[in-house]
Amino acid sequence: MEYFLTVAQEKNFTRAAARLNITQQTLSAHIAALEKELGSRLFERTKPLRLTYAGETLLKYAEEITLLHHSLQKEFADLRSQSRGRLRLGLAHTRGRVLLPDIVETYHRQYPGMEVEIREGLNRQLPQRLKKGELDLIIAIPRAEEPEIFWEDFYWEKILLMGSRDLLRRFLGREAEEIQRELDQKGDLSPLKDCPFLLGAEGDITADIGRSLLRQSGVLPLVSARSENIETLLELCLREIGLCFCPDTLARRVLTPEQRRSIFGFSLGEKARYLLRFGTLKRRYQPREVRDFIALCRQVRPLG
Image (cartoon, rainbow, N blue to C red; front, side, top):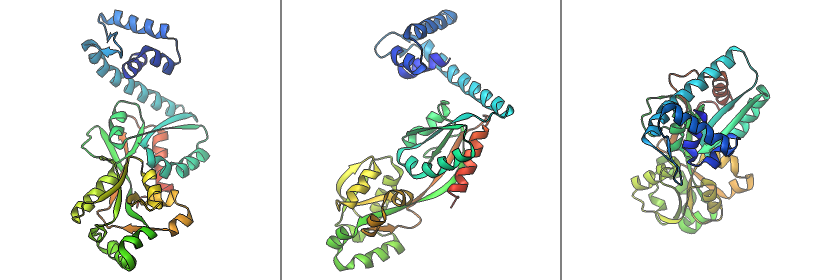
């Protein structure tokens, strides 16, 4: 099943063999033997490989069998009280830099035999990867109903509107600090209608909330730059290219004391925040390392 799933994912025997650390001939022989046993061709030998109808049918069973096998291994490993293991953790790219250094450092001091395999990706892709058995735990923002996933609250992330002090003085003049106080109190962005903005990609939670706040304030933003990488936008913000929406934890993690002194961080109220949650599969044994990691996350980054 593992060999079949890997070929189905890679759509190429050479890449699949390299990932499995076996020869291509060995892998081809295993797939041929599986096809003979089932009496059906599983792949169309095109470039890239394509699953046949029989292959698509097997894929559904293979994913379920692999999940059950992984769950079985984890439960018996805990019964044997093994001190070694691996936790496959999924979360968004930027969020890894913000959350994980302190958490993983503390985790490894307490569980030196555990390997944390960090798999970063887009927030919207993480639930599917969890359901396919590629991950044991995700830290994500649920954007749709996921009945197969059990969600637990982690913490509320606050979004700031960041702006260079010099840029704000240039566009707002002497009223800059007064406007900052009003933004902190009301979250109304209309006084910034003439300022340039730096916006993230559609589908990014921080960028989506920022666009929603601009619409609610009646602001059609003048966009200086767009990027999927919030750290790139923050760097452009420091260079006075525009204002950008940024998670509070990221700003505190990446900005130096000198940079903090050169930049405003507007707090925008209750609408400018989102809840990060832990996601695990329902109806599956939850391994000890998952439970321990979640508990440690809450100690290092308490729920707030």
